[in-house]
Image 1 (tube, one colour):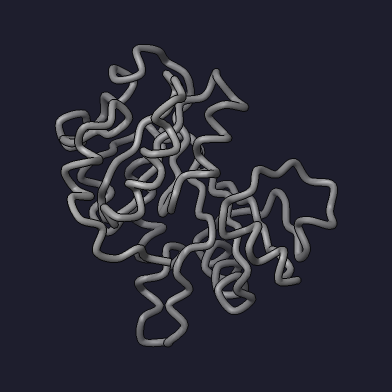
Image 2 (tube, one colour):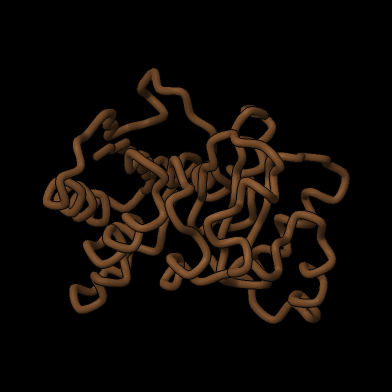
Length: 208
């Protein structure tokens, strides 16, 4: 999933008007960047940006922030945005492990799309739906914690369901085959790839 060795990627993304290069200074005040009080939705691990860009276009009254930790990957998103003007979208090159350093009680919804499954049991704390990460999210939600997850990985999905319910989240919507259920859906680039290969897409929406 990672694009490697794109020369000058860090410098190139820093020139994009969509990139927030110093997110820590806006902690608790991201509404000032958007200059409104609209809800803020956050995608952690945005990849090359198809989902977050299309969501921002579809829902102009919601502010969207995409986080991606690899320069070479987020560069692809900024390239897609070169001829697009979206006032409700910002991107941050950041590692979600330190997410509480940049947000504080201001996120309404988190999207976790096709996150790394970290299949080995000894790495389960690295999964974005682990108890360790759910605790981090507690500090950034504005009010009611609300998470929407999509994945092609059955093991990660089952792990996530247990993790959510153990952490007192309630399931609002669930699908074991998203593309054959009547659920509104905006695709990611990886989602299209997996669907074309015949894989079912698992989705769950939870709230606490």
